[in-house]
Image (cartoon, rainbow, N blue to C red; front, side, top):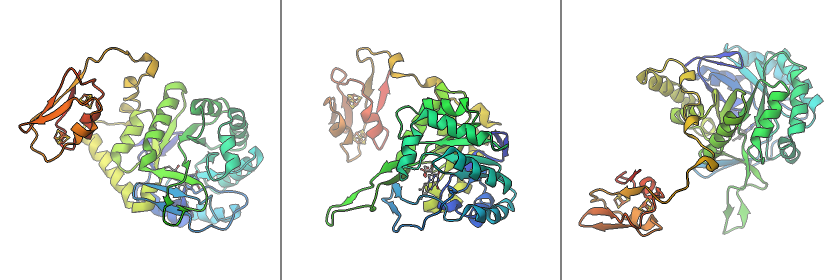
Length: 368
Ligand SMILES: Cc1cc2nc3c(=O)[nH]c(=O)nc-3n(C[C@H](O)[C@H](O)[C@H](O)COP(=O)(O)O)c2cc1C
Ligand code: SF4
Ligand code: SF4
C-alpha cells in the first residue's frame, strides 16, 4: 500500500482533501490518526473572511458549499502545523490567492512552519477571478514557476474541471516545474430550488462535490494521464476503496477524499484504507504501481472507435421478478416478457447496452 508520491513516503495512497474537515491542527491530526496517507489543509489565504451561513447544502447524493477558505490567519498556521505534525504524518499545505507573489509568500511561510508539500488551489468556483485564472495556461505557468522558485518542497497544482482544456493546464504546470497536479476541485453549481418558496439551495453559486462529480473527476484524471507525464492526485466523489482503485487505474498515483469525510467522519477513510489493503492482498498485488493506469489501455478516443452496423445484441433470461424496467427503457422496443421469460428481438436490438445497466437482477447481457 505504500506510495512514493512526489517523493513523499506515504503509508497508503488515500489523503484527506482540503476542506473544513482539515481546518486546523487538531482536525488534521485526527485525520492522520484515522489512517490518511497525507492530509491537505483547508486553503490558507492572506486575508481571511468571516463565514457566511448557511454555507453547505446536501441532497443525500451531492453537496454544494460556499465556504471559501481557512479562517485562520497565516501566522496562526505556525501553531496549527505544529499540532498537525505531532501526529507524525504528511501534511500538504493548500494555498490560495490571486497573484504569484502572494502564493509564493504563503507557500514559503507554510514550508517554514513544517509543510511537507504545497498544493496551489486556483480552482475554487466561488472565487470568480480564480475560475478565470484556472483556465489560463499562461497564468498557471507563471503562478507555478513563482511558487516553485520560492520553496524547496514539492508543489502540486489543484485544477478546475470548469475549463475547456484541462490537459493544457496540466502541461503548463509541468513546464513550470510543478511536481504534480490534483484534479478536480468542486464544480460551480446550484444544488436545487425550493419550488414552494423560490429559494435556491444556497444564496449564491457554490461548489458541487460528492459522488455525482466522480465521473467528471475520473475523466479529467484519465485525460491528463493520457497526455501529460506528471504525477496526478485524483479527487472527486470518492466514497470507498473501489472508487480509489478506479482513479488509480485511470492513471492517478494517489487520491483525496473530501465530502465523504464531511458526511461520514474520518472513519470512512479508515474503512477505505483497510478495504484497499484487503483487496490488494486478495489479488496478490504488492504495489499500487501494478494497477496504476491499468484501465487506460482500454480507453480510446472516440475517433479511434470503429463505427459499424450493430453487431451486438442483448440476450435475456428467465425472469420472474415483478418488474418491467428493461422493457420501458428500451428505446428500440426490442424487449418483451413472455411466459416469465425475457425475449430480446435480435432484429430490433441495436446493442446500445442500456438494458444491461438498468436490470436490477443483472439478467441481461450484451453479446459481442
Ligand atoms: C465544504 C467544502 C470546503 C472545501 N474547501 C476547500 C478549500 O478550502 N480548498 C480547496 O482547494 N478545496 C476545497 N474543497 C474541495 C475539496 O478539496 C475537493 O476537491 C472536492 O470537494 C471534490 O472532492 P469530494 O467529492 O471528495 O468532496 C472543499 C470542498 C467542500 C465540500
Ligand atoms: S441493448 Fe439497447 S436496443 Fe438492445 S434490447 Fe437492450 S436496450 Fe434495447
Ligand atoms: S429489468 Fe431485469 S428484472 Fe426487470 S423485467 Fe427486465 S430482466 Fe426482469
